[in-house]
Length: 342
Image (cartoon, rainbow, N blue to C red; front, top):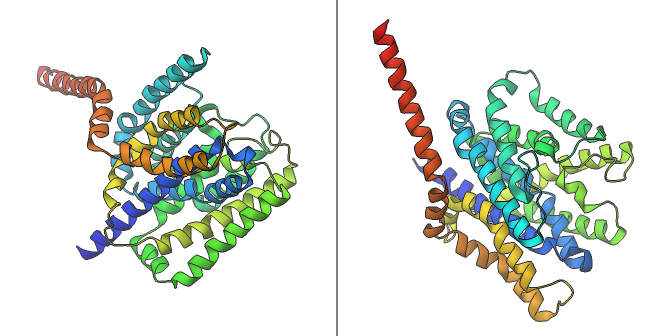
């Protein structure tokens, strides 16, 4: 029981820290082209935060039969509904009608990719050396000029290795990572901060490379450069993630409960981020505005982690869930009657 408790809080604590970086990254995204410090922080965050977030998703997908069974209700339907909400909000704000279920709105690609990973996991793990093959596929997919954000195909393939790494990771592996001296992890993170500073100072590559949603050609890098960058980013993300896991506490923290609300925060935070953009335009940035930008992620997470927000989330899907449950009962009843008739 003690081990289960430790593992539970370790994962919850990781999820909270990572969702903070997700929100923080999206808040500062609007301002990074005018501020080298924010650009450095942005690249620093994007090296590891989604790879580690996806790693945890893979770790929590070990019961793939259960996950596959719930994938449509918990991922695909929320993706479709929130995509409609997002594009409706975009239309209200810009008068541009651009809804498409094929193109995930802003952050919603994660729901679609997670859906694909979970429904295919059962079949993927049957392949010999699937982990190595997934890394190779993630590097090679960037060579396809037409690859992009449609159905989140590029991200699904590029981030797949982290999902599989999570699936294959055991509690013992996590405990081994936790056993390393924290000084090594702190040093590693500082090295990555220096790397981010160096990248920004020397303008080494387009920060959008870290999104993993574009081909090398679209990012205007040679196929060789794109391949090398992605290989280095794979290694970097893994090492950085190990450092973060090592430093995150096992025990319950004052923020641990927020780990249960990460889905609510993930799908709703983009609307509050847009409010930050509206009230703090990037052409009017002073000391006060910079302070507000830096504290806004904390405020957003505090608001969206409330139980009332969970009720809103559940309320959105109540009619859908009732319809699904009613349909399942009707099918079972029909099969039962049909079986008796024969």
